[in-house]
Length: 126
Image 1 (cartoon, rainbow, N blue to C red):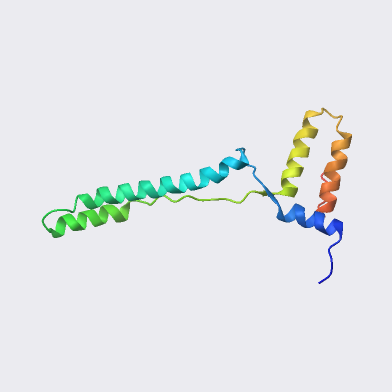
Image 2 (cartoon, helix red, strand yellow):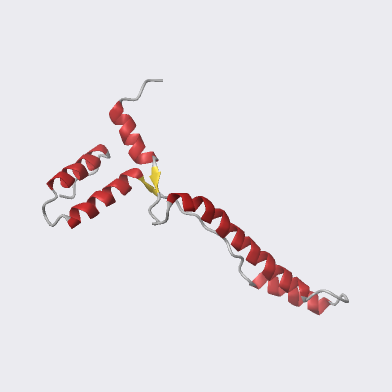
């Protein structure tokens, strides 16, 4: 296997590395993901046990059927995760925001943005 050149390494880093763009602290994500998954599971268990509690006691076909229908019609809570943005998109967005604050005096930032886009082989948006 051949060695990668520094420009190849940089391009792969821009494509594969990811950054949090949700706006929360990167460290808090480690705690918040398990916490929200646990919350979803807990609420599902509570709703199911409430529905099944109605079917306890003397066996009765209609109460059992009603409890089963109540279980089936309620939608389960699910915690969905989404991917962070690539490093290239993150750097582009950061440079564009920074250039927007410079009021037309962003020559250096425009050059940096052009370099990022050239590395990613994207056309300059000018």
